[in-house]
Length: 87
Image (cartoon, rainbow, N blue to C red; front, side):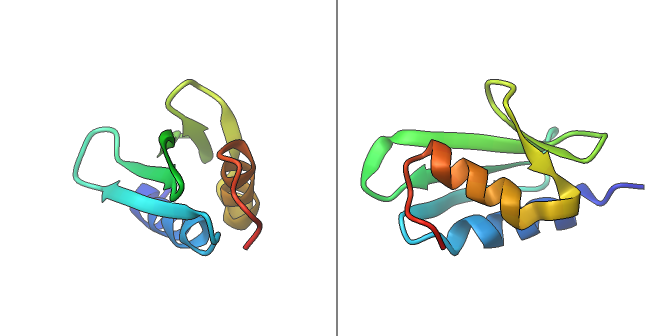
């Protein structure tokens, strides 16, 4: 069974390693649980990420960032989308 909580915590940690990203919230008790991330230099560049039942990180507009098999790459893809510098 997929551990959504653990995977979102890991995603938040990897996203937070990017110099230009800030984790706004990690809501694990919600349904669905999510991570909210923003670019530190623009309040308009934000995204909410959930973890699907099949183990994929998905943005609020349905874009698949990657799988729980490679959380670091999924966070890097979000950083790219939010115009952040690499970790």
